[in-house]
Length: 376
Ligand SMILES: *Cc1c(COP(=O)(O)O)cnc(C)c1O
Image 1 (cartoon, rainbow, N blue to C red):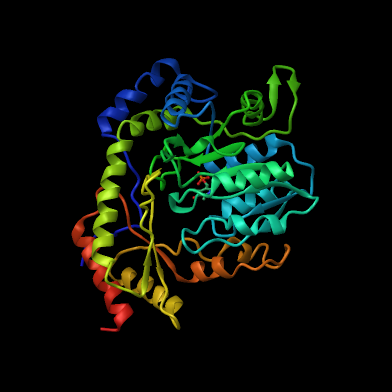
Image 2 (cartoon, protein in one colour):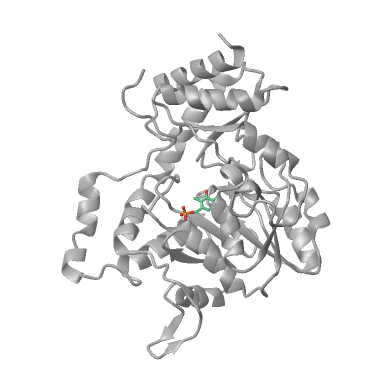
């Protein structure tokens, strides 16, 4: 049994000396935030790395989502069709913008929004679709765009799980009207806390720039009801350092996922998400499995979660409960059939995954799973 805690993830950090060298100049300039030189450099480097036309850095992924939605200028009470199988941030960002979430069920094949169920939920109040590339599984972006074009509604992607990914060689941030990334410490790429909005529409840059700085347009003009969502220089410096190792980080994750799959393959009672579509370059941010034993999959999932804890290994019920069932708005919004989302929420477990994870820990996880599934 490992004597140190194994968490579901472990934040990537550069070498201590590398980071210290990077932040040393800040003691000369005393310029710590408000669009500093590292902020500008990181915007430039990320724009290139993600192959997107425009990018606006933010203090975190959640504010990126909130301000991206605000920047679209939807009328109050507008409906946003979204997935309940996501981190609570996605749903909060809609509601905090005085919009109404309409929950659409997911596909069990990859846990993304079921594009075939979107059209039925569209009403004259619908203003946008807000899907999530769950676990780095890229949504059916082409079908979703077709629907959006047909009904003249916007598409905003929560791409918090899909940093660095491409579909048919195209950076994932290029789909829809806007995509949002999170650079939180728990994500594959971090700026400690941080995030970004990416988009095509050039005028959005200025708009988001103002919104993240209290809506201040010039010294004497406050043009919008903005927030404070600027990325500071220490975070930007962290981001510049971490960007150098991102590809190595992803390759290490890929190898670990392959090892997990090889060890789990024979357990029929488990659905494994394989991340093996030919036209997608994955970033392997998560390794979720689904306990799908007919009668008691949910119980087995909970048992594995608890048992792993006894081994000092911390997995995550990610996502449980689904956001539509969150205590703060349960039963408050339009009732839709969310059968698959609830099924996945009750049975999913994200297992530890980060570049330094040892094979011995994976072996230990597998033996706990085997024990719980077969009761041996
Ligand atoms: C992490 C995450 C967010 C929020 O990003 P923060 O940087 O933590 O604010 C939003 N949506 C999803 C799907 C996430 O995983």
